[in-house]
Amino acid sequence: MKFMEEAPLYQQVAESLRREILSGGLRPGDRLPPVREMARRWHCTVGTVQRAYQELARQGLVVARRGQGTRVARESPTPGPIRYAALVHQAESFLLHAVSAGYDPAEVEQAVRLALDRWRALARELLTPEAGALRFSGSHDLLLARIAAQFPSIAPGYALRLTFAGSLGGLMALAQGTADLAGCHLWDAESDAYNVPFVRRLLPGRRVALVTLAHRRIGLMVAPGNPLGLQGLADLARPGLRFVGRPRGTGTRVWLDAQMRRLGLEGPRGPTLEVATHSELAQAIAEGRADAGLGIEAAARAWGLGFIPLTRERYDLVIPAEIWETPPVAALVGWLAPETVRALTADLGGYEAEETGRVEWVEG
Image (cartoon, rainbow, N blue to C red; front, side, top):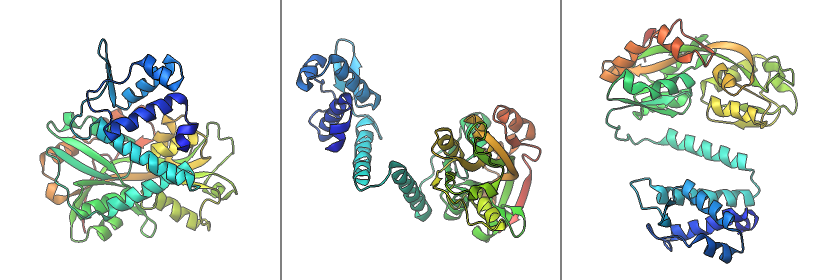
């Protein structure tokens, strides 16, 4: 296989053993050949084999114990290292096939993300909720991730499970019953209002509360020092400018598309990359894969990027009336206050909390 011919030798050794493990040639508990024997077999150094064994250990396929050598890991409860490695193996086979067909790895990654988004949006089966878990679906947010991390202290005995599927994706999950609450920052150009018009359209007949999490500053993320001298959205029309954006259905994309239409522009003219989260957007610019992107200031600061502020948006939690008085929701709403959010975002920047905890009821 071409991968095996071009990969570093230690990876070839590791891949050979991994295939033997996945095929059942080496079973859980079996001892791998001694390092020196493998070195003779592969005509390489002992260090090369040791590095291969370390790679397999990192993947969870083998364990090394003093005096017992290196052995195939015992099968563990789902997902387990063997089952997970089999999935990785299938993914690599698909990637190699796609690359051989002429696709760039970035294109493959984008296609997989889009396929996953479609699969989630089309899924109609209501999954059995996890006991003690509050299921969130919606727009990506760094503050919300921090709240989820400390949720057991906010609502003892409960966890906040996050799925970042974009603002529209979150409202659709509420409509389908696959989420308990959503996160939304959708701006309606006709009414110049956030969230309410979309909630009414997508959740007809439902009574829901919009609880303001915070206001966030949105703008263009650029390389440190803004080497291209970008000043605003009009600069996105520069030929050749590499833009990284968010998928359709996200609040950031809805706002951007509306503003570009207002400027009489169709959109960025250069190559465009789409990513799932603000953090991935910032990472793409930091790694030099894109020149600019529209996202939240907190993500730009986290990656040490330049930031050109453009607007201030409201991020709401969308909570159906039927779960409003449940213990985890009551605890969360009671905890949300300007001072708590300011403390939690002090090192992030880009958040304003003067309206945090504000409640607006909407009849769909």
